[in-house]
Length: 153
Image 1 (cartoon, rainbow, N blue to C red):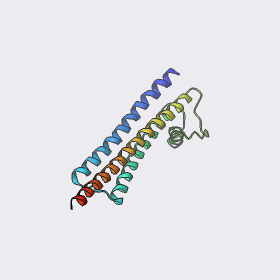
Image 2: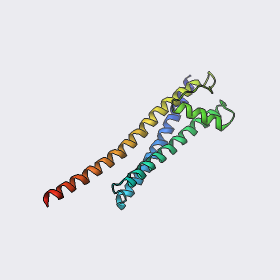
Image 3: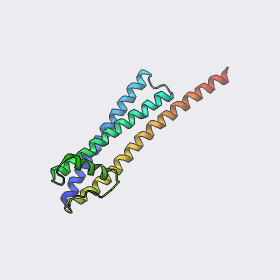
Image 4: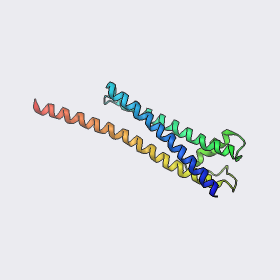
């Protein structure tokens, strides 16, 4: 049991690194768009921004599913990557079908992966909310500027 806790914790830290990398990519993307003036408030711009955020975060999650799947393969829990990846996705998303289960010796890793998934999806939700707050604040600032201009004329 202790070995599974250590292995699971190490992989959770690795997945946190993947999530931090994905968010860093997003910060760089939005910083460049702000510097170039590309982030003008519009339905098209906001839709593009949210689409990029979702795509990058989901790509990060796919990498996290894969890290767990590779661990399960390494430990001999599954015969092929496709099955391990499916099982990992079900665990990580806390869907928990239970149609494929790991050995009794390693099943604690499934629970740790589910906890990891809850935390990583929470961080993703926070990143999405942060982008949306930026959009709302940008639109509010523009409205306030327009109101000041309108009042002064």
